[in-house]
Length: 311
Image (cartoon, one colour):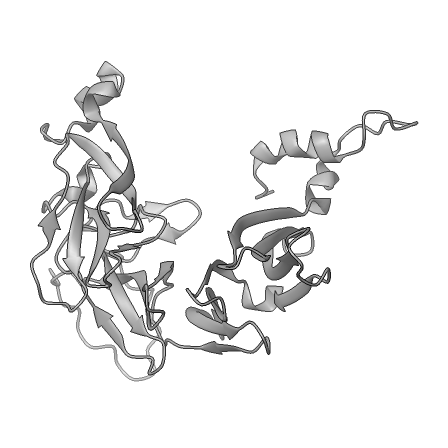
């Protein structure tokens, strides 16, 4: 069963009120009956919440999500809840546009995940990208014209051998898998595609996609979303541009990248440890982020994970 064991505590709470006449012990099947609201996003006017409802399908043993619009009590909005995107799209990462008229989200378009933009008034969602890999970490620009997101850029390693051509009609064994990167496999993703995560911008009106970060670093992968400066000229993301960054899981700094692309980023933090999840104040004068200096980790982890130690 792929359901998280951490949900058992929630199941105990939702199984029934403490004063129920006939208490019923929690059983494994109850985990499939749970419904959870996740990643709630308040609308700019504060009257509605876009929220994902997470359920579990017992037929496929899979987690499912759909996207709902829920009114805030006492806000004056309609009391009717609206289903915006069904589970067939597997929506995630829903984010309001600055004017509150649209919601961007990641959803299935055929067999691949793409960025959709939904008109809140008419409820119509349209795909705006044709990406090879699933995007993540959506963030609207202050003027609402662009969306920053994170996506994998595949790196194909140089071949170290060459097989003879397969004769027509021949039946051969599956080709060997050559691993030259680390990490190369995780649970539940399975085999990983070699490459680095980069930050892109999407022009909402035209669908044009522009890459704004470059080089090694896995830029923005550990952030909730790229942080735009109020003038829309830069995005702040975490990353580690060291060639062996994949061997240093707890080392990253924050960098400000020009949105125009092709520029040199400005490094904002230099601590020995990780800094990620940046957020910029409305006046653009302050930056909040999550971090952990290496010195705060237990000594044995410092010895294993220190970026100054060869692994």
